[in-house]
Every structure is written in C-alpha cells, then in structure tokens.
Image (tube, rainbow, N blue to C red; front, side, top):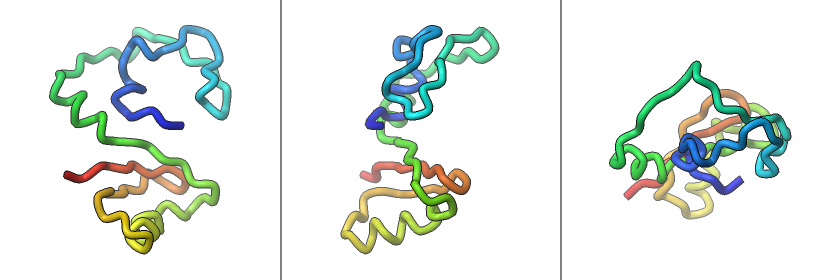
Length: 92
C-alpha cells in the first residue's frame, strides 16, 4: 500500500460502500457522520510525510528502526503502533 496518511484521511479518497482494491482485507470503506474533521493545508503537508506500515510477523515493529539503520536509511523515524503496525515519518 503506497498511500500516505494524508491521502487516506482526505474525503475524496473514500470509496462509499465498495471494497477498496488497495486494501488487503477488502473491507468496505464507508463515509460516516460519526467522525468528521477539517484539516488545515499545513497539516496535510505534514501528514503527507507519514506512512503506516504493516509487518508480516507481529511483534517485529519494534525492530524496524534498527533494520532501517542497518540498511543505511537514517531519514525515516519509526514509531511502533502495536504489534503489527508502525508509523513511518520522513525526516528533513
């Protein structure tokens, strides 16, 4: 999945009542009135540098930062979001 967090939260990317082919779980994505918020343009710019990554082996999100450093990638900050998700942030 190569969408940034900003792309995911923008309203025009929501597929109403249809399976989203970019999602592996093929759950329907529906717009709801339960959660609605406005995002300032500068926040969208910040969010466009964030990605959520999913690991194949639960628990390995805590090793992603070390793995990136071992491969020579020092411009990416990794924040684990539980056992199988990590927030990847592009550093300037």
